[in-house]
Image (cartoon, rainbow, N blue to C red):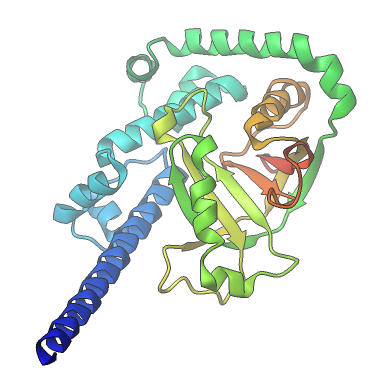
Length: 310
């Protein structure tokens, strides 16, 4: 009898020890992920500049020796490959949506010449910048031709200032259609649930265009507004601010899987017919109702295009 009791006691101790080790493992994994995301955010905000491993490692509080290995382990890309790809993705979006010249776009993404930029662009997209721009312009014109009359009657676009927002977030990397998992994690986090009120806002930060960026490299931050004194200690969450600025906004009605049509209208019809210029910030999606409480056809999403200050 006493032998069985001792065995059960040992088993309980081993289970407790395994749980402690697992919790430590998860805590360290979350720590490294959050640190690397801080570096990714810095790179995105400073794509026109060159960065040394020492500079980036300092942001993450890692030595240069360890930093590039940790970065590659967390993201699946080397630092150099990540910077090159994000610069090319930004350049592709600028070719589609801005009125800047190809050389200006090259300089804005840290290339010193048209030739060097063209070589790097063709390596990633298998076509020259000018051919890429021409092909995408033709696609937008086709969309405008087929949708202009219908959408003009149905969609209202407003230019408004959105206020600065303090948010807790989790990053999803992969197709936008698979971001539901991180939302589930956010809304099962006790600290978030304890701060939620009727005024809590759910926001998606959409960094990449799925027609430009490879689906497995798409970045998306699922965010909820939180008080300024909110701390993420003991959770997987990151904390940051969404800057207050001007946006062109439109309400998309219906399934999240069809928001692409609203983006195409805003970029392909509204923006090209306006005097506005885009800001370098990512687009936002503000989710106005709860998918667990309304039918899919009644979902409302405010799409927000960042606009340059006038």
